[in-house]
Image (tube, rainbow, N blue to C red; front, side, top):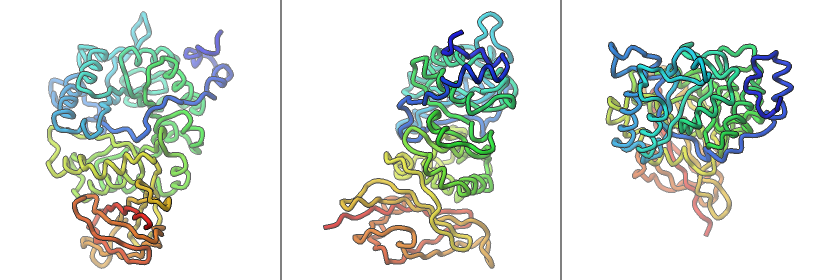
Length: 426
């Protein structure tokens, strides 16, 4: 039995599988991908697991939905801005593997052309193809088989289909050691020779994640609950990050990113201010920008947010340093991310998000004015910073020095977002 082929070993007792796979699991990902946070589109938050294509043809998880979305990513200008990964989430499989080959099978009615043909269609648009899988016995919606017992086979199947991005969930796997299983599946992906971004749900399913280990084996990882179409959900994910920000800041960087889940702008419940909040915060956190919406119905003002080049530039900053909360006063909080350019004194520029955390008394629905001296936020450049409003980059607000007060006015559930560009010393 070769220790280089133990994808079938989960069928054996866990102790045997552990011994066989331990040496493989020590091998890091090292795939050279995701040097900036991945950007793209994924259906799950918006379309869930709708499988009735007769009654709900526009919402059904099907070949037609993904071809339509590929067309819109290109024709509406998203692809040109970096939203390049079109990722199929759960509910794409037949309930069982092929009886002869044991390979995964796309649903025959909803994906009649098969995954290789759909992959070719997406690639021909200049986009990249992503696919969901689960490390356990079934997928999370329980409509298809998981990877358990078939790591090498499934990784090679994905490579044969031209997959560029794999999202690996963690349902129906209580009997597995995730600290071994997730690295093992990543090793199987690498062994195919096809570059595939590896998105893990590993830390979400364990009590005490070892992020130093996780970042060696995954390009990105979910650390919080599934996002929902609400300000409350965005706030809860922000707070989850805040409680462990010192660890997450150290873990994130080029090739390995903290993933707070999908962008839900453009759906049903989020206000315009809450939409601005999510986009700004995801950029501050150096998060993947994976939209989950119907690109046919996204309102013009939301499309403008999603295509804001200045905010995308912050998210994709090549330094890859995640941001963190650096100042709180009452129900107001300031988040700071170091970005380029670095001035001739070696000091960073910054993206600063000023956030309303909760209700403001005595007027919960009123905008709030916030004023702070910049040096309290760690902005110490003696030459000062030129300030631009990232939601309207043409608005240059002037030069601010470290001992100057900066004032901003924030709407309820809202955020203001600025680039502080470090000035050179002359």
